[in-house]
Length: 607
Ligand SMILES: Cc1cc2nc3c(=O)[nH]c(=O)nc-3n(C[C@H](O)[C@H](O)[C@H](O)COP(=O)(O)OP(=O)(O)OC[C@H]3O[C@@H](n4cnc5c(N)ncnc54)[C@H](O)[C@@H]3O)c2cc1C
Image (cartoon, rainbow, N blue to C red; front, side, top):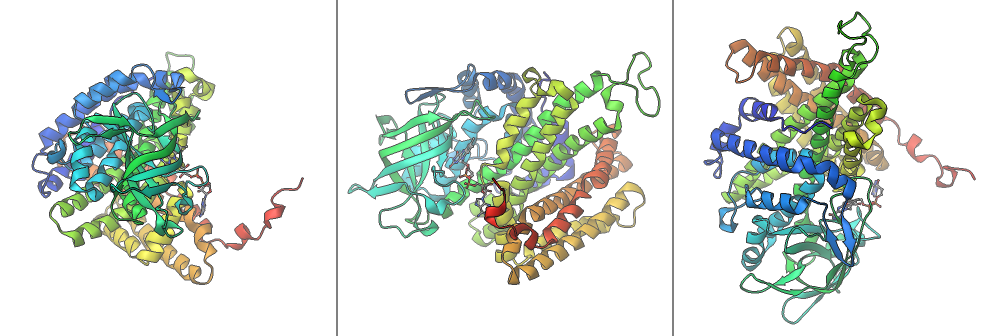
């Protein structure tokens, strides 16, 4: 099995050369400490723990899984020790405020680490990963007392957090939530109900777990306008911060899952558990969106993690394994057969994986700069700017989550395919990547739900296409510089202009049709999301190729000429082999609603 190596060279290319993070950090109120040297030291330190501690537990954690015993859950062998190293390294606190024990660095730095931790061992990363959203929610909506009580141990990784939304009858449609919160005279609430599928809901890594729970007040209006948010600790917390009595929230069981088997997915029973409201009554879902947006970008990164891990597994195998002779001539003359990597179809698979991993990483790093700007505006108290950046990030989020997780799954499948039948065998780790990647298109809002959020809410309802016009404006800006250039770079620039125009026209046509046919939105949405993803990734590939060409020409790059040439060649592959898929998605998005809706529900099958 291939040992995962953090792709530091690619990360540095994006950070220092393509997206010029040093200048970006210098413009932020919390960016002074994020010097290139500090960022590099963080990347290297995080890479060491990911490669040496987390990656070696990936296969064994999957094979062993978590154990449930009478309400208690234990993680696989080695996880406790690894978690201690993660906590002692202060990795959780990188981007959280100094006031609560963090290091106060920009959010993007923590997102860089999310990728390496997730590629090394996604199941492990779920435990601290769920805490990130919990911390952000308390930071934004908690009272001062709540912040002081819960944040320091969460930031220090002494406790972890959860997100308790899903119930047996509903995951997507949270309007159906039944968990009830009864107010008590002392200002607390008694929570009653059952939550299912709760990641990190119960485990043995920390002394306390802080559940963030959606529930209804007894007199709340029906639907999403009657949902409030509560913090429910596993152990109650005394005034001095010490742990008090065990709260009545208990783990009923854990799920036996297809993948991410070392991550505990719990059924939690709240039997009059003591909870405290966060934010305002009946506005819980709004507050929970803080949590969900953080979690959705984190899940988008999961797509990149599996694309990268699977590519890293497939590449050495394709270089070593031999099969038949290459189509044009013998390549490896000292051997009876040529290596797989000489066969065009194997190259297609490897290049697709590489294009997804590196293109997706660029998309995430681009969005991470917007997240930094949003937090910066909040720190400066400039709420108009904060909203502006939040809206921009809100446009990226469903595209990143939906498109990158679907593409990550494709890449994971291709990695297994490169191994042939051996990919199906557990010991190589390739089939585990497929199983682990599968969940990413389901949780944190399925691809279908991301697509409705993108097209229905972000593009049509709230911005009437403005978010597309803004993004395509950025595409025009890049393409204009190179539109008359010769060779690959000029060709990419001209394609980018064509796609930018096309994206706006597609949006307009769907908008016009939706006026008379509301179901056309639902029937077009996933194709629209995939179209948007392919075109957005094309921009980020053109951006990388453009910078690589510039650095090749002026000789000022930090990387080798081969590195830059490989970037341009991978961009060409993306434009010629993957971007054309956008045209099919466009055609499908514009196809009639009739062919989707005309079949009677009783006629789908005949007994
Ligand atoms: C391993 C794992 C970990 C999880 N972790 C957590 C967690 O930590 N916390 C938590 O609260 N939940 C968690 N979940 C739950 C997860 O978020 C939900 O399963 C997911 O949101 C989908 O909800 P559902 O399963 O109820 O599917 P449903 O909502 O029943 O949806 C079923 C299908 O119908 C589609 N659909 C539903 N409504 C519509 C619509 N209006 N239009 C079009 N299509 C629609 C969906 O896209 C989906 O394909 C986890 C789940 C798993 C499996």
